[in-house]
Image (cartoon, rainbow, N blue to C red; front, side, top):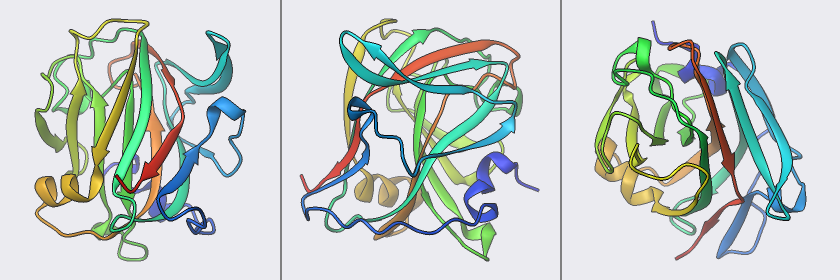
Length: 217
């Protein structure tokens, strides 16, 4: 049986938000404008504290995990044929070394953003792609989630060599990443989740997240 860390979209019924925005850009998280409406939190093991705060005179989303694991997520339909590029920024604030990240006891990350293709009632068809800030793995390594197996792919975008308290901007072609890492052509996704967690290792972790949006190029 797979962990609830994987199936939370299938188990929480909320209305699916359409992406009714400009064709070349879809806003997901406007944290700089203190806008977190339509974002929800779901606990797996305790609650990571997600809150808006000022950093260098700009509002960001702070995620503080004390032996906890919960997601901050938004359920929204994204047409990856129109806007395949996921854009965001993040900053590692408190380093975490959870051990072996490819096993359940070490499945903790100072920061991660992941996209979900919801299987609906066929929950075993739910898939996710996780962009993580890894401690153990080098940049661009990938592996299966220890909880969900090949249905949830992990990709290390940042690693232990990246500086603490430094902002990094990311841009990923989710359409192509899903094709490369799952072997499937997926034209739409159903939501985005943020998670800073430290429950399996029993440690602490803290990260900041900037605005999140999809673009056509």
